[in-house]
Length: 342
Image (cartoon, rainbow, N blue to C red; front, side, top):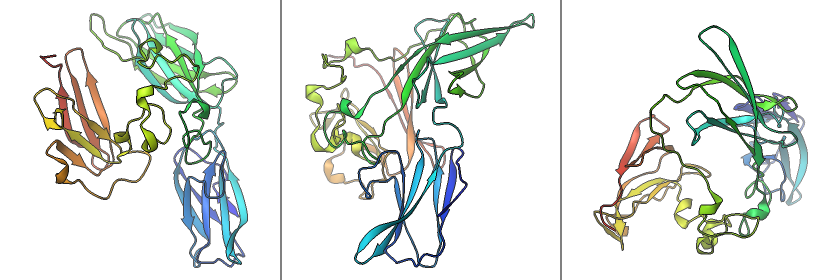
């Protein structure tokens, strides 16, 4: 078996070919990355046609592991492993990825969060700006790392380490950039000297005299008040089979479509009620069954389409919009404000 290319850039396609194989119509190839449970545990499966000697796996990204393509040949009423090829990423799996900026509760700070497969050294960020005199000040700050494992999930199958259930997320690194001048442009890189540094990016620090709101996680506000190191295990949050062992995940989180309800109370649309929004455009194929009017008039917007939610929040309101991937247009949007009654 042959792989082209022999190592992958981010988002690149992989073509795997073979020679001197008398393919059976039932033959297939699988793509995996990291631990597998068995031969039926994979990211993707492509059936082989007898007229072809290659397959293409599209749009592969960094999963902090080496991709493995396996060829299974149907022989004597069973499948046998005919061959495998390993395809690493071109960059190191320990390289810093997925950097995201966030505001902090101090006006002269900005937080950088990123991900990698390594916690063998302290995560860092280098940032600088050129002042009006032309000189450049360079700052280096260090941060913290965290992760979670399959044992932190509530129950099976979320506790199964493999391709289809639990995949180790790597390490989430957080570093605070402080002493920022207001309304100034900064350049920054994140990573470290051992695992490497990211490309150079830039951001604009906050302007003076402006109010910001931010959302942050606080273990002290966890309503389940866990006293174990396994984190968020709310007694009220075990949603049974459909949550597949993910802690605190409600049933509606596994509907792979977009849908928004009117303000609902006791199954009725009311002026002041709970608005339910499901944005399930990830993790699986879209729903194909459509939307039934027999469920009631509460469903005011729905579509089977890929997309994402965009939210703007302030102390007075929350504006949410669903943006479709296929055309970039806002399909649905709503502004939520606090209730006037209790």
